[in-house]
Length: 241
Ligand code: DC
Image (cartoon, rainbow, N blue to C red; front, side):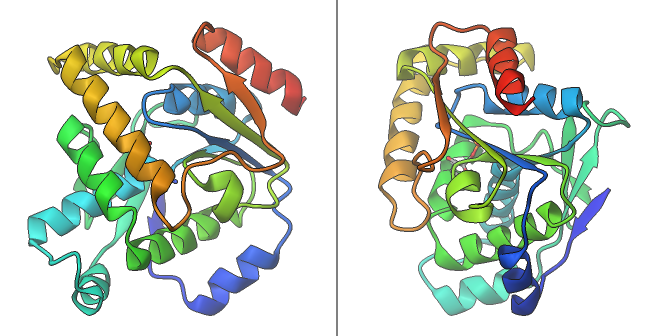
């Protein structure tokens, strides 16, 4: 179980300077299959899995519930001081699903809606949010043995990670994968709506000023459009080992 408290700036700097040899980063756009792939890769090599998207979603839920005025940086920063996130193994062991608690409440399901994905994309462009979550993620990764997944884990959070991957796929394929994923959880979703949201989220995430979605210069880029999950996991494990 990992409780993220508010790390001091000195912790943030020390971790940024350390050598995170035992870190694998897997970044890419919405619906590309990063979570499934990252979980399987982490299980295969006995690493912890850090789902940074879940953290942005949980912060989004927290801010929406509180009705915080996002444009007011001082108000936003004050609100964030009341945030506590905790990642836990939902299936009781490494390699299983990761759950997240927001101030003690299990919000693992509540954050997985298309609406919360859009909220997460919006709040992830805000500087106080990124500063806080980047520090929490470095704190987690400071222990090593982590597969980190998100948008900026190879570029900003762990720039010195030993292995970096960037997954991509055509938007139509990603939207279809997302619809299937939601269906598995019993959430009915309209393909056209999900495709429009995927494209909008891509634009937000790629064009924002802070930590935009892009491959690190030293990342291995994989177009997974015509690959199965097993093939993607296999390709990553081959590079790592
Ligand atoms: O991976 P996801 O769909 O759960 O991510 C939700 C949103 O969170 C995504 O649209 C952008 C943001 N995000 C981010 O800005 N940086 C990350 N490292 C992970 C997610």
